[in-house]
Image (cartoon, rainbow, N blue to C red):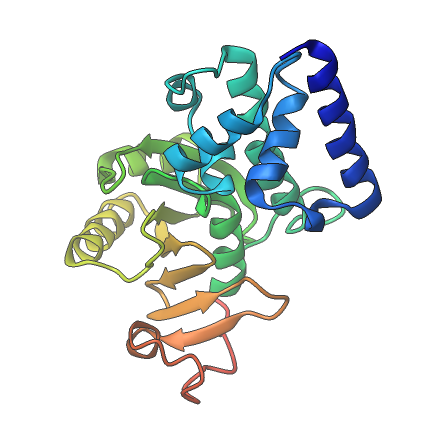
Length: 260
């Protein structure tokens, strides 16, 4: 198609956005609009559909690793970086909401840790592991993405986490990993990992404050043996059994979350 046709179409969808905002767009239309700012003089509609087919959702596209994006025909390095930046920007803004006026983040309860964990890993399409170092006031002094795994597995090595704790003089550690399936329910391996990491940290005088498993907007907290939902302003806390049975309105919601 001539450049003038593409230009006219781009101006029409940009004008639609200016007048009506993102709510007027389906995901593929919104992604098509985003791509117009990375790809000059080319129809981006087909590429938007290809990306959504490949990564499953708009979230999947903007959180995909750059090498994965580059495997899609029509995506160059600048486009891949541009798309990845959208997901990183969303994560950064979400994280800022948790910080105080000085930019510090305090994880005083499982709900605090749940919100932090979701802000970090909820959009990851692969399993990943984070070790978060806290001081005596439970303020974050350092966080490490220590392993990016596969779609279904990420290895956690207790020795590595102990070394991170020593390096950053942590008083306690929050361990986080995600389940890309969206289900935060712990496996037997997750339980065994928690026990191994706790023992390794105790041997050097450091506390494992919690192990959080992220599944979308819900997490499982080993310290409280509960599932915590943080999609709204108020956290929702369920027993693991109620969550697994999909009984959100069972009346078994815990009303109070105790501090660590």
